[in-house]
Length: 182
Image (tube, rainbow, N blue to C red; front, side, top):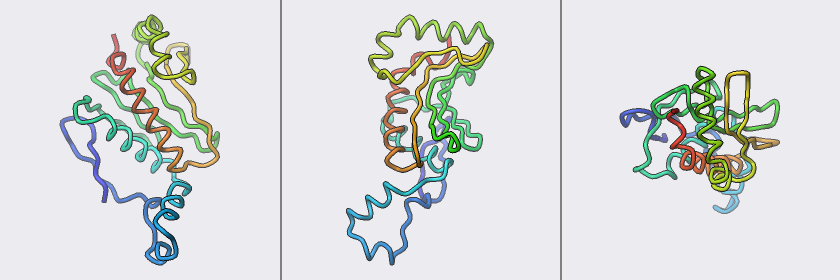
């Protein structure tokens, strides 16, 4: 059983060890420890397992002093917010499209969304320098705004999960000041 810090006042979220981390004793006996690590990195995760895997890694890397967000999960979409759910980080794998989307979304009234995006735009050089060129600030719908990036994949692997989690943690650190809205 694994346990990770969940949203809010130190509540804990528990769930069984994901199947991609489990090996039968017989399979483990046939492999060296290094081979087992490679096999677990190459295993394909289900979309929901992938989301929780990335979340656990990202949150663990932030340290105890980083504020804990309120979390919302709908199937394979994870949203983390810091005081205002209209401004939230979102992680969502789209298996059929072969992409993972990660970003800070502004999904409130258009005036709120525009003001939040304008704050990031005012600091665009520093924000993109900290996040990297794969990130884009965009008008997503007629009213919603986001700063996001996309990861392309053929399979949701633990290796991809580590890369997404590292980027997720970096985004949380860099974009946290913009995540509560205006």
